[in-house]
Image (cartoon, rainbow, N blue to C red; front, side):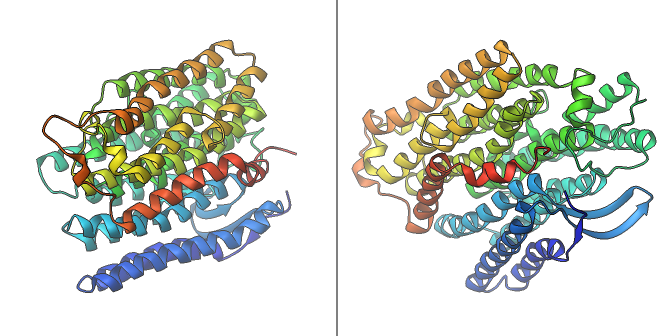
Length: 493
């Protein structure tokens, strides 16, 4: 890789959502202008991120230094192949989610829409800052911004359930970050003299004389400290946050929050510890088996949930660990499978939550048991749900198939039969908790005394985004090379 190139475009990507939040608040009495500002900010951020793609694909590392606190501790931005995967997903899906939230929030005549849109933009400001962090300190700073700015979204309804969910969300994420990540950062700085990410995923930043015990403790603190990754036992905040409006659930699960968690976790695994160090200290395969428990346990819990959003929430807890598992295998195929699942999961999971929101807007139903026969009244919504569910299961030709294919290849390359069994079992469980939703909707009977013929599809502003994201799930399955070509830039030449 050539020498880093300084570019202010990285700063522009941060300024766009920040300015969007300000404009939204200034136009609180003009809803059309307010929502145009949200859409414009999202579009500008996407445009800036796209301009960064060509030099990154050419092997260039882009940086922008803001200020330094200590030698080796600075707030610096960086765009490389790994960061571009997350930045592209977050910025593109923000545009789609803004359009969806317009129809959803207006359709239900939700209160505090100005606050909602402003916090939405600020959350994306934090997420794109995480994507473009050049070091652990910058990553931690923006990680905390995401936690704080999304609290008003989780507690949006301002009722007892909303406040309890928001409180659990904030307590889990801030205490794990301050109690585990901060001490780990101090130890890393003392041991290495810097918090900058390595330029090579093989080497990491620790010296050859580093204590195995100390490195292992720091590693455990960081894996658990980034609790947005949903790894058990620090996953309880995620189902609790489902009290938020559906666009927030989509933001949490597909666009920003949980993706910030798994991105931060895998960024640290590869660019702080490195493949060689993790292999030498036997950190990779134990991590893969540790998160395998989350994959299977969360799937089993999902089976027991009748509330659709709750089932989707535990599905997310399970699916996030695929990303960490793939990277923890420390094989090229496993790492690529883990990273590409950040993209594939995003498109599929946002579709699933969009569908849950569309069902609620059209029928005010939340429970799967109440949706018998509803697919005949809402065929586009439930067809999109079915497509996204196939991706979560890992069936071709949808994007999730590509993820599981690479994960299986990675497990075989690492000679880990146990991980192969975990992947196969989790696929069976995926079928068990997604399949009945679609089958019940199209072939089940309505609850006694109900006539589903009276229901229709949600308004176009809600319906079009979910059809679009479902189509994109198929597109990334049929044409996976776009993200794979970017991810190959992560691998050492």
